[in-house]
Length: 615
Image (cartoon, rainbow, N blue to C red; front, side, top):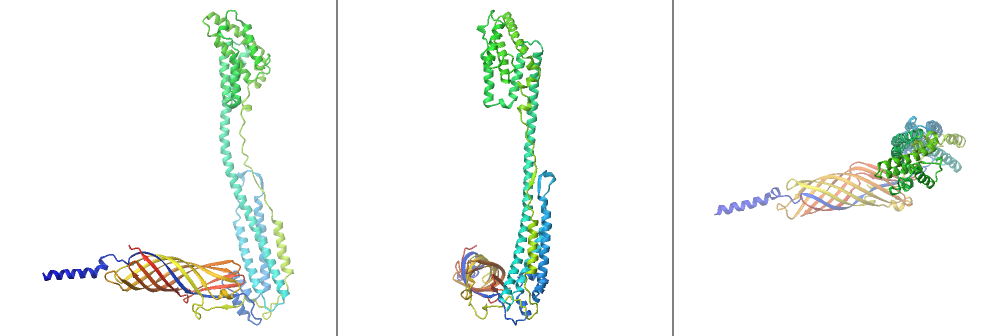
């Protein structure tokens, strides 16, 4: 019995001691939270101002060659700046301006190809001026650097005010000339772009129009062929009847062909013409002598009277010279319906007699209208296909483009660059003792190492991540965050240019975790250390007192370390981080520079709180 109690006690102790391993660790899982910190910022500012006259050229040149200067990428320009060689700078600037004019003139000649009028699209092709535009852009970039270098060199301390003013006017003339030539390049490139787009659009529209035309032409040809065949059959019937003693027995054939022709004419398919067609048939049918009116006393004169009454109703002359197509429909309808009415009689001999009398009238009619149906005048009665159908219009597809020639404007710009740059530049002092090229020295610098936390960046961020422990002591965490920073610095009180700076930061990284206090029962307070690396993307926004905002961004790698505390699902971390890579971010407004130094001295002391959701 005592042994059994001992075994039970040992099993309970073993379960308690191994519970972090056998059971799910409450420290594992995803977490979200936030942090607040204060970072020691290393900031400085300086302004481009002249140095004292006795400053050596070497020290001046070193201050005039910042890595981000446009002329710094050109070795010859940097050398001229170091030597304060105004004459050489002006010479290369003039030469490159003339090269740019020549390049633009060549480009203008290429662009002249877009000036076309009523050309067939198949003979034209798009124009590619990428090489010429690229050459112009390279020259413009170099000329801009040359103007900047010249501006630096002529910024001379101790020179007379009128000389400085004259220098600035000449540099402004150079800048205006470059702006003018750059404008021509953009206009020429725009002309080519517009030409290529309009040509492509015209070709596409022409293809669609050609496709529609082919469909319409096929339908037109089919309609003309169908109508012409039916018209030829009807005309043959009428000519045949007029050329001989027509019998009323053939009237049904003519009447059928006539109706087929009417239905082949699109004008009579709907609307008023279709109504007129029905009216003509009704007029012909309304003049028929009915069966009860036919007897042995009926003869040719009765039929002739009825037919002439129909002509009067139709306003058609007895000689049929003003007969039209609908009048012919009415006449043929009358003969057909009258013949059908005769066929209703029961007496065969009476039928034969009355058909003979009706045939006499039919022969008389065609005898009178012989000229109408045998000569060319029948075309006025039965329209031809070309008067019924309108052929579709063939798409021209001709292309025109109005071209603007900028040759005169380019030449005028060349005149400005040559004459004013040569004749208006005042005499320059080229000796090292008289000429000094200066950007200036620092007017205000705050050292972040010696004045710890004199510049503070207050920051806050949202955090999301995951942590996992492999045992009671060791674990790791991965996290991402996005935050905002507001900087407080005496520089903003002293400086007359800059007003405030803000920042945005995104981070991604991970830490190794070590808990030196880890309760075996997974309840109570965990205490430990963390150490890791964070990759950061910082965006700096500098606002001037005129409310203009300048911004730049920087990537860096930070070390991160501190203490961690966890109770249940609540995690508290007290940490510090700073950059591992030295970077300097230069934000400039006019001649004033504001520098943000990312160094080891940028300690960020922070506290964070997160809630663990478990795994």
